[in-house]
Image (cartoon, rainbow, N blue to C red; front, side, top):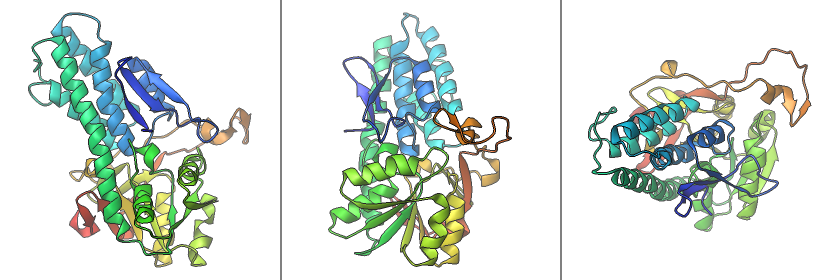
Length: 342
């Protein structure tokens, strides 16, 4: 079962609702751009490669959602929807990458040209959908290759610490960081995993543990604040995380990643980042990137109950920045890169 795909019968986006995991496996169908934006904002769909796919599919959805017969009007609607989709989550580069890739396919010129490459509205829809589906197919192949490249770094009997969820639910399928684990297990290696809970939305506790247990891979859930003790006590051999954006001087990933990198460096444990080339944004540096801040109630509340004073001030960044000096290698579909090569 894929995390996200196009439903050819309904002409809409079909995705697993990740907010329902682990209690139930439930599909969500996005038939409008508003419903898609809500799904992205509420993290029903999340994870860098999955956001790349949903960005591309979002342009196809915009084309199918248009009900008129004027190509210039359709162009305006698609461009408007593209901006709305990209603005939902500014830190994760794959979302914009997916949107721009499909948008470029249906426009004659890059950067929002004023004419469309299709002879008809149906042509435009076809161009958009074909390219969006191509992104989805490529994502699975890329992740499998990342997994194969990274699995060579793991020894039989290794225990891996990971943060957040960089598995099949963060991608179209297979996963990046967890794809490395899956590939190593597929090779016959005995691999165990420590999954950090990943507060405040517990993607590690809810999603990573569920994925690994579904695959029969040995996983132990720990609090984010326990990573230091498991590293110091030599319970972990390597750390592998995903990435939401890789810039010239470091990596943006789920909040808490930087802390784990410092602890890994202190305890002389290799710290790997697994990510596709679509996550690279090497023309920019960390200081140029806006870090998304999430709603205060994600920290104040657990479910519907307050676990902190209702009016307490909250700082809730979704991501943090890990400098290249803390990273051992970056595992990509084109090979394992030394940070100095970036």
